[in-house]
Image (cartoon, rainbow, N blue to C red; front, side, top):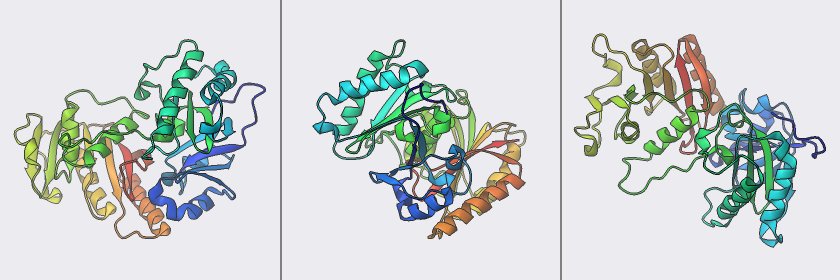
Length: 359
């Protein structure tokens, strides 16, 4: 975290995002964080008293925190009723954060999926005006083009007002305000919603490591119907896909695809085969799926990433979810898989995405 300029209001609150799917367990999550009184902002955001930010990134509650930001500036207001809101807000952001020279400015709505696009448009216009005030910055830098460890000025705006702070994308747990990226899924352009999940996972992985080169060879477990396979192929990757069920016919004959219609548990790669990444989105018990991942990691090169969906069937209590995560991570650690990150992606349901690295 970077301290605000001298003379700025003291840091008194932290903004955290608890994905709506976990809303029923918000009290339990806050208890694990050691947080008492909070101020809800919309269905997912909460202003919480400042404490050690590592509490939002490590420990039992961390997987349930989608994004976090120190609030160095807050303006509780109703923007539509504020005269010259954009100009006043932009000038204030420049005055408070200009001396800190952030690498970029990214502003978004508090409710990204709301049908009313007013606040999305307001955030975009506010970002445009603020960029004009910061010398050397432009809107050309894509969010994923940020350096993960360099501070960025993030902010969210909604009917509750404007909340902004400066922190690196890696510490915030995302390149975008709120940590999320909208993935287009227009009709006919994708095979299943799983394609959006791996697209978001690959964006997220850039927080922790460079992208794999074109032509990198993935081993995908539980590939049917092929939504993730399709997305990887569109990105110039090669895929060996495994599943007992067939893939979508649109994947037939793709030159980068090798498909084995077989049980993952009995699959053995051809002699001498080495993969550069592994992807597992298998349904069912996470620990059983992880056993197959562990068995097949001997065919991966050292340092290869493993993207693993930690599914939680039957875990209908908060304690059950926490235990499922804990036990799965223990199994991975005993097998020598290094945990790079664990998070809840926007396109996850009641599940988590683990990013491991092969020793």
